[in-house]
Image 1: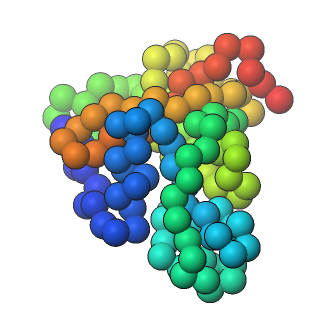
Image 2: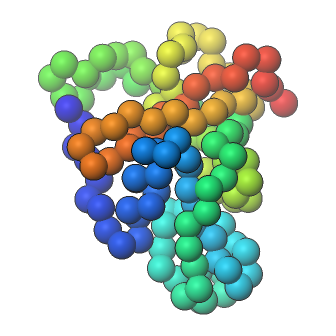
Length: 135
């Protein structure tokens, strides 16, 4: 079992929205800046008028790595860890495992969609390749 994130006022919407099948990102209601990781203060305009919004849950792979090291006992390897440019949240990248694919099939700019796996009170995001979706 992987260590789980500690739920805080800032990050609880991100880690629990998977229960509804949603990827949520914090946005500033004053300047519309997308904020990730979640914060209570907009880094662009210093406003405290921020809150989570659902985004489409799709994106494109910005970069990735294939992990071959079992960091904890019983960890399945190899697996792909992907950094994804999130659609609907300009400038936001979310890092998560890429599930259900052969590491040899992964390419930069491939389209992905979000999925979630529950672990306790947290819904861990993971990405899935979208067939035929490349830049």
